[in-house]
Image 1 (cartoon, rainbow, N blue to C red):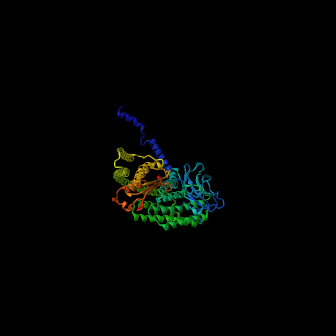
Image 2 (cartoon, rainbow, N blue to C red; image 1 turned 90 degrees about the vertical axis):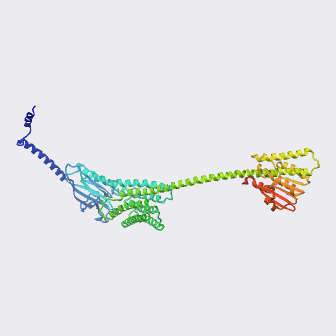
Image 3 (cartoon, rainbow, N blue to C red; image 1 turned 180 degrees about the horizontal axis):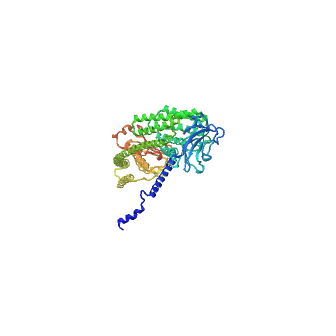
Length: 638
């Protein structure tokens, strides 16, 4: 179809401006827009609006609103400003205008202490107990979506029943009526401030309190941890005042209030101790006075019972609030003096909390008009800040300990190397000393054993006939060979053979030296006990053998004695006594100990000392006496 023809056909369907039908269409559009705008304006103009708020005391029939006595009030309202000293029930009447067809919600910020809410004649909510023990709904926001069936066209009435006491600032908080989408956010914000934050505060307090309590139990010298744990747990109990909805386990509101006051005094005192200990401060007299005062206050509150004069309640609260504020201020000054980072950080945390506490105290004293407390919002930050400072201090201490351990490990490693070197040197010296000791032992054995045999053989040869048969010399040489073999065997033997009795032990010596003494016409008496005083030790018996050989040889060589007595017996308490006495010329005992006097006597002394015995030497012109006292092996410490 050509373009012009298309235009000519379609032009018949478009209304012309001068066409009556066109004017009617435009009129309908304008009318619809005007009606919609009018509805919007009417909806904006018709909103639920509170027209009046009044309150009246219910002295006689608390369950129903009184007929008279209504006074106009503004919210939030604390009835003690109007009726000082009044305890009981107060009814609040809130009249407002309802626009039909609209959903309406009501939000009550708080009601102290307990109460109930009604819309016209219908109950909206009620606390569990409106008589003692009263429910604790003072910190509980209320939200209700008003049922359409209970609403009336025009004026509606919200009734709030409040049951409380003058001293606890009882009354009614702000009331908000309006569309749910506007009221609900207000309620949720208030719920966050009054319910969620206090519960978060409790969780943080119990967690940090228990943690640092365990740390303090493991490290009792860290007193700041213990005081922080007590502070946290006391704040936990104090914070229950904002969270619980019942005074259990107490039977009255006053009983609960007394308990909270006691906890508050302990919290402030423990907080002061924590701040002082963390800052490294000690005030013995002030601390003693503080805890004495706290104990006296607690006893006084308990003695006064649940119902104390209102002035006592205020004095205790304000007095310990002053302790808290004073501690915070003092720590600010202390942190500025020390300039330590952890002190400055804690001082900043205290300062922020101090601002919140000051605000809440001014609101408590009704100096400022604000129903919202800042303490519940800042307390978790304060507790976390204090915990972070303690953790900071703890990790710093651990770092110092780790550095000390590393330094200690370095010192121990250095000492170990030095000790290894020293022990190596000591081992070399011990080996050298052992070799020298073995050489001395061999020299002593040669002197006392083989030397004695040589002397005995020489004496026999000198006193014998001019011509001795060859067998006699062979016998002498064999005896010397046996003595040498015995010395070598005893020097390298691990454990010498034991001897059953003293007679068996001394028999070889008695035989050898008895013949020699007989040839020299020396009388020899052997007085030997039948049994050992104590179980003999083979090594000790060997030493006694060498001692006896040396002693008898010295008699032959030097004493020119005519008689000799050998005695072996029990000196009492298991002590073995061995003595050799002769009637010879004697010698000077002092000169015998001189280094140039030979090794005989020194060898005997050293040998007896090594086995734990004691050698006594007495000598004069009438003879010489050698006595050995040897305690039992159990008493031998060498």
